[in-house]
Image 1 (tube, rainbow, N blue to C red):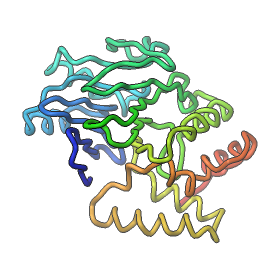
Image 2 (image 1 turned 90 degrees about the horizontal axis):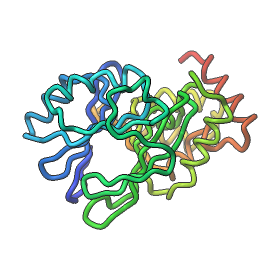
Image 3 (image 1 turned 30 degrees about the horizontal axis):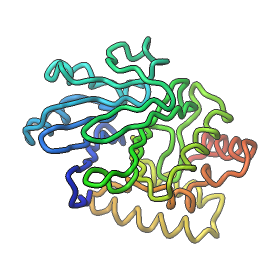
Length: 253
């Protein structure tokens, strides 16, 4: 990923089949978001001689919390931030948060957003821009919003997910979207299957395929791009969203 010349950097670490663990670095400290597994993260942090300050969890699924306890074995003083409503499923959390809570971390203010839908207690972490730290607003959104897609409804309802996406869509258009899976190519191919004449979709697919061919990630995206090429964000009603989600659930690439 290209790095801006700022006092921080964010690195995407691909693991498993398509997970992305995000590592936010400032100076000699690091924050890890949704560590699916521990060993690649440990190796990455140790190579950079970085101290793990905190782990941010968006939801309880194993491919998001699976590496957390192993990381805590090496960095026992690291905080674990997670939804208070998920305390029973993320029992090792040390900072329990709810919607609109704010916390300070690595010189930045983080606002907690309730984006339940994929799971019943899913949260996202919104970081507004601040001179010398984050030059663009950023959102770590787990499995709620993907590049050109959104998460499946495992525990939530279409209404809850639609409301979550509407909440995210109200963020500034420059907001960087750091989601937890590399699904963009597949999502765009699905969208084109039902919107074949949409040039925005075709243009983004061409861009994404070129990046993937070079071994690069297709994300982060931004709100502006998702408004153009994400059919779920573009949905005008819960009914339209529900039809799209059902279609995507049954679509075969």
